[in-house]
Image 1 (tube, rainbow, N blue to C red):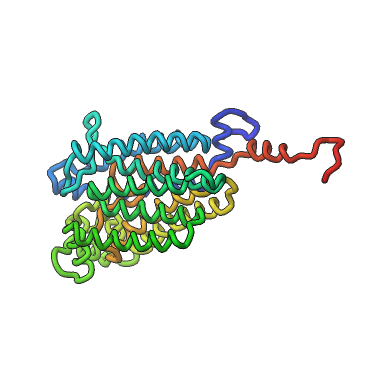
Image 2 (tube, rainbow, N blue to C red):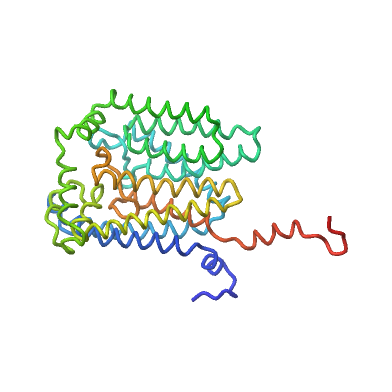
Length: 384
């Protein structure tokens, strides 16, 4: 146990970190690892790999992911901002490279290969984009003559254009929703709300008419006609699970669900552990988001407030999209469940998000004491 009287980076970290957030992140990763035993063996066998191929890789990805999360949690807010700027520049450059030299998967170019490892740059772009935009919004709020909001709009346009070019409409919608929420918190004028809302509707209509796969998914969702195998099997798995599930390893429908270890791991959880378990999972994500927003509401520093709110919104909205697809409440869209689904890039990137949240929500009594000393009345002088 680390003593409160002990001084040093580790002791300061232990007593200033939000241990509830830390425990929540590690617990959700543990749940994801447990569910990989249920979801991934059938997928591995279906494509000719040994049964625990994805389980082993999931465990291998967890080690650097946790290390990244813990390492980033030591950063100060200024260091978080600088790290995010560097990460954003690298991610955007890699997204451009992916368009020309990336690996094409299902008609999209989202992946690049580095040292034999496939990386999805857009996953790392998301937390960095949130932090940089929070900084721009905060600077505009602090000094209105600084065109922070304008720079944030330009940056958003660049990111959205790259995502659409891949194409990755799901990430575009997620990024737009998070950015819009942060802009709203930063005091967006009503004219901007109207213009951005109209732009969002126009963008969705444009995607429907420009991208056939988007039109196909929306049509299947609205009419129920066409190839709905993924959604049908996911729904069947949830129904078969009932309230308390079939038990670990007893699921049957999971064996034929495409991407059961990534996009549809929520349905596998429902079949084997039941609807009660899934409700508890939803509540965990809800508590995580509400705690983050509560912290942001109490935060006095604009940058910390916008960044924490944006980061937890990103995790929450991504969870809503994944779970909504599994429950047939949203059109089919490949998006992982944060901290739970299998995936190297997504797991490490989500832990970058978690690390930023831990760093920005740390209690910093030495800073508060310094701020109080600035307003302390010197001895011998009359108080005003």
